[in-house]
Image 1 (cartoon, rainbow, N blue to C red):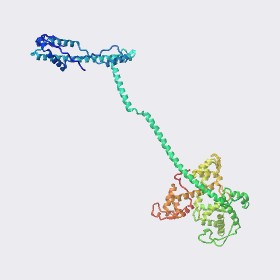
Image 2 (cartoon, helix red, strand yellow):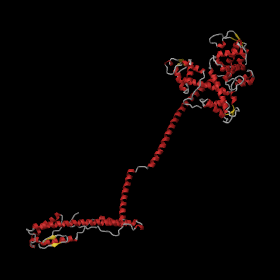
Image 3 (cartoon, one colour):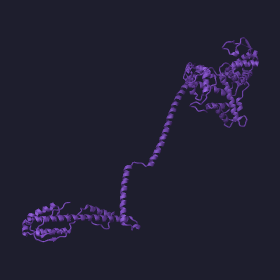
Image 4 (cartoon, rainbow, N blue to C red):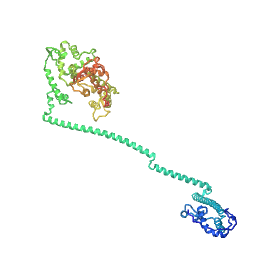
Length: 615
């Protein structure tokens, strides 16, 4: 702060001592010069003393401002009046009034200096005295400044305590007026510190975590996101599957269009070249037995089958007109039971007689202990039945009949055995299957009434044929009498499914069993051919056939597999090489011949398909 320059004072020469309140002592012995001498030198000393007082800084003039720091009474610190007064107080400059005893000291010094005669001899002592006075004055001045500052601090503390007490008195309820003010003040101070610290922490938290979400919201969003991701993956998988199915459907559509165009072309060609459908009712008057017998023969048969029936009826009439058959000789291509030169008699039996004779031969064949070739067995059977003389005649007669009546099951099967086109195991297994079905149905008939429900029939079929497709089980159900209006509780006379007529013809149920067996065998051999990837005229080795059979039918056991390989390559089972032996590669056969050999034996699937569950 700036201080005004002091005014110069004159020194008196009077020799006396004065004691001031500040403790400063002035000795008159040092001031012996006369007033006249002082007056002469006054003008010279005035400038010098003025400069010395200013440079030393101890006798600088007192500040001219006055203090506004006063103790306020009955002022509410939070009121509008208080804020207004506090604002005006802060805008006013701080001033401090010079103490009165200092003013008295200065006046006294001025008077004494005016009286002093500052001689040349006493100038040095005067200067020392003045320096001492200046030092004492400076110490008093510093002491005063300290006291002043302490007073200001005390006044500020008192005002603060008053404000705090007023704040507490306003905030407290009437029941708390008796609390200790110091304690309440301290509590308020600590509370304000806590509030400040809490506010700082709150600001820090807002700054650091302003964009942070709560954990519960985060977990909920994370769970929602996970669920949506799973749904997305599922929908993506479904979409890819639908795309694949769509591509397959497009391919099927293109294939269907090609087939449609091809069938249309064939239809056009057939319509152009085909003859009108024959009127089969015209045969009613030609066939023996009239319309009733023809309707029985034609029931359930297509045009090709009706042609066979009509040829059989015509051939039967021609056969009856023959009295003798010419012998075929003794060539190697002639079956052993037909080797004869000359004329043999036609015994002219009825179809029923031929069927009964063949059934008797079957029964004797099944109980035979030492198996011989079937043609030799048949001729021996005829010799035992009709004698050596008529055996050949019966052999020719039966052979001509079974060759003619191909629509009859018993005759066609017997003819295939005699000519080596089928193995006995095929028909033996078929008869065993029929017997097993009848046994299972009998077990299902808990009341022994000869009746089972349609549900029982379905269960028996599925347990007996575990590897049949569902549609073929349905076909057997329909052949047994089931129809779309039937219920599972409908009863069925299961014995009627296995009845044969007088000519050996089975019921539709058994016929459907045989048809499905032949179809399944053809499908099995076709799968084998596709697995090998060869043409019919190509050569195939034993290891390749073994591997292909295991691929299409993983359920094959070793014994059955060896029997198939033995039949395909016409080797005894004992001579088959083990898997992995070198001589396996040396066993080769044409694929067509191998398939024909397998067609002759009882060939059926032993396990489910890889991509198709069993019914």
